[in-house]
Image (tube, rainbow, N blue to C red; front, side, top):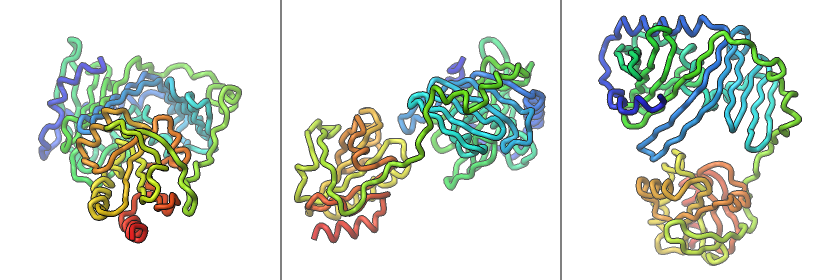
Length: 387
């Protein structure tokens, strides 16, 4: 059922009109009433990110349990969310997050709002709907419409609304953006139960891009989960405490660690030691990084400015597949080659854990700058180093 509506997505970016449909408001009210009537619930969650403009697709699945009986918590509910990679629990006073792949557990004596907002299992979720619907219903500036659709011979409501220059956060608040665009939300609602089946989010700038979330195996007012499943101590024997120690970025005035690799596009072997006598600018980047995209024309400018000097610019990528790198190059046109740090050894040696990170190395192999991309600062260092 997850992908039944893909052919229907052409309909998503309809023109914004001036008035809302009273029938749509009624459906939203019934949906809110239904969600608010349950003290506890569990469901299976699926999220499909489809950003065709960025050649990006990712699916996420998980099991969700929500308990709204304790409304004096920082978030107004308790939750457990779990899939094959993670488990996140908020028991009303403590939060812990289990990374199953690393076999680690992180604990906090308070609600971690930031963690919840970043959890992929709560994007456009039941919590999002329950918290956002009151203001959407009462906001006259939010255009609301109603239509019908048929899925597997069953008729459903399509209750839609449009947000201008803002989206919904996981907790259902408005997240304002600086770019001017409309965000279209389509909620597929069961006409009998008034429970949501799917939420589809798209936008007016990249109309083929969309996020689809779906809810199945919905069980309202279920029995409480085992008491010990809410406690951090229950998991201590299987997971070690996560370290908050951050990787230290390489400092100035130290010799840059040597490395050997091959250029992704040409398969030509390259090493840092072969570049002695040249100034080397390393940019650690990943495809799905807005700042990395923004840095490309600025780096191209520096390459052109110092074209006749002894400057070599090399991108380093440890995350992306070949076709993703090719897509990035085709769309953004960087004028430098990239090597693949497939095992992450180069990033580890240089202490890189954020993107983009620039490391500037002088002709003797000494690091003279390491940090974020700062065009004016790097331009000044290049001017001095290349004299």
